[in-house]
Length: 150
Image (cartoon, rainbow, N blue to C red):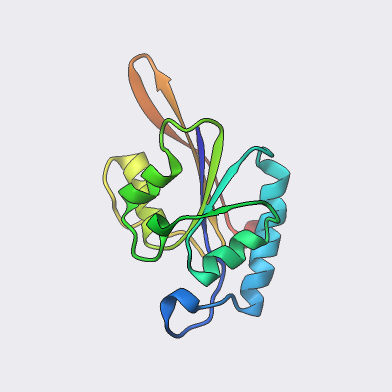
């Protein structure tokens, strides 16, 4: 399976946290990354979003159907995010639109075997896949992208 961990774009400060919307800069970031993703993601990609406004506004930029999943809300545990995505057994590609530090911790867990701090820039993403070599399952980092690199 392919797993894309996409951090929400730049959002307004304030509270309540779940209602923070994207800034103008964030809308532009989301649109730019969404254009790149749409050029690279399979059409059959399953898209999951946190229920936080800033996350689903980021997901909206894809102009694809997505599911809002409470298990990937701010403060979620990395293991719950991976379970919601179906890692490692889901078929095809799953894109998760979520938050730091959870997405970084999920990537760290897959790459290094433990949830360590790993920062993903706003609107940035990590693209991972899995495979089996011999009898050993492996996680492979397929790519990392930031808006600045587009």
